[in-house]
Length: 420
Image 1 (cartoon, rainbow, N blue to C red):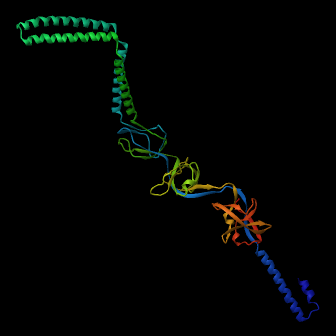
Image 2 (tube, one colour; image 1 turned 135 degrees about the horizontal axis):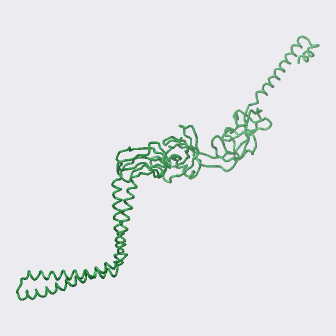
Image 3 (cartoon, rainbow, N blue to C red; image 1 turned 90 degrees about the vertical axis):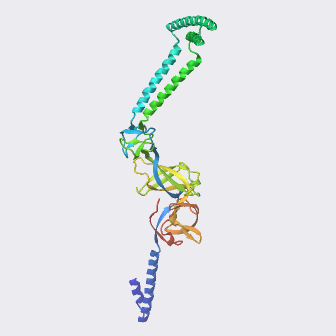
């Protein structure tokens, strides 16, 4: 530049030299200004490739963690606690003995029921076996004796009746012999029937009656044994002792003595609005965040009520999440993200790429380090992403930062890729 100036100044007058110099300085400043403007017009941006993906929309609700299952235990029997095998916070398995009640009365009842059963079974067996020869012989001998007694009584009756009729004896004396005859005849008939029954064996009805007595005795024994077993209070489910309301030596009544809670899984109860209840399904995966733990978990919807809660005017939803380390405690507050819809696979970009003008939406794509403004049609959006229905092609690079400062054809300087 200095060489040119020197050359031009040769042969010029003093006035001409000042004019030329002024013009050259102006042109130099203008050139420098153009260069500075060109550099400043390059805007630093990040870009992101347009790609296909599925987009999910969510609704966020709150809930409270509760045990997956919980049982308040009330003993079937009342009694004093003789042994206590658990403590608050202890783990138990289904069927474990938790405590034992005093059982002396129940033991006595079992022995009595056993004795009654033995007697009923013996009576039945005797009937089924029938009478022995010795018993038949005794019954025959008894029949002969009662027959002889009846004959004697009949003879006495006849003789004293004649005396009574002839008024040799009083009516009172005669009635004595009359009663003896009646008694002798009854004894004879009874002995005769006993012999017949013994020789014929038990009737069907007699056997049924004796069998019923055995069945009743067996049932009484089972009931007595059941009551005895109930003095050992066992865990109906596996879990953790979350409350303990009784101690050794205290009297168990008909109120809850302890609570067992299952916490390897937790159940979260939440509520969804009328507009969202039909958008969720049993089995849907759910994102759950516990602020107290600063940790997120993945759960699943286990139940959706078809009836709205009268107080909350929304629909109860139950969500289950695994809790193998027991870090989620019952009562903890939870933030729940429910999946309400999912798009089919389509073009997805960052929502920050969108620019709105007069109700239309645009993005800037990058070609040869220049920004090109493109009108687009959008679909659903979620978590900083938006679906593109028209206007873009897969693989194109869109500006995701500083898009609001760009103009069509602007120079850009790529400083990185956005979220991939």
